[in-house]
Length: 128
Image (cartoon, rainbow, N blue to C red; front, side, top):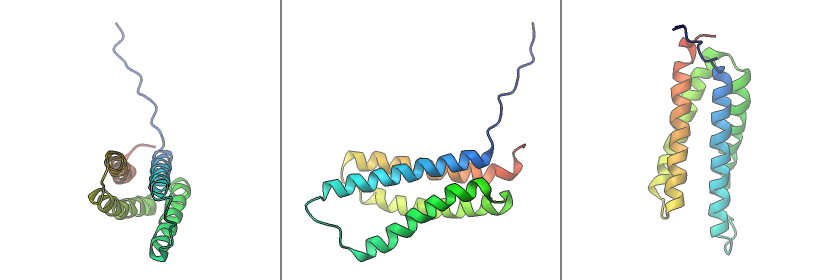
């Protein structure tokens, strides 16, 4: 009987983090679209909302790129800090949720933020 088990190949942490940022960004975009569709009768003209939403979208897009090309030591902290910032935004979203799909969306946001923090925190100690 052969008891040697082959270890499953490890996925590069950079790819995992980029995939988590992509998933978070897609979920965030879906949430924005769903919220806008519910308020279709009233156009969004809140400049403060746009002033906050656009930079947050740009930050998520940049995190996808920089998670792949950035140096591990720096990107570890950038991922942890930004994921915690987004976690706070998402807790605020969840606190204002009114219908079931908003709670589910908020739970997804928190899950992806938590996974980003987890993988980024473990990053330097993982094998190559």
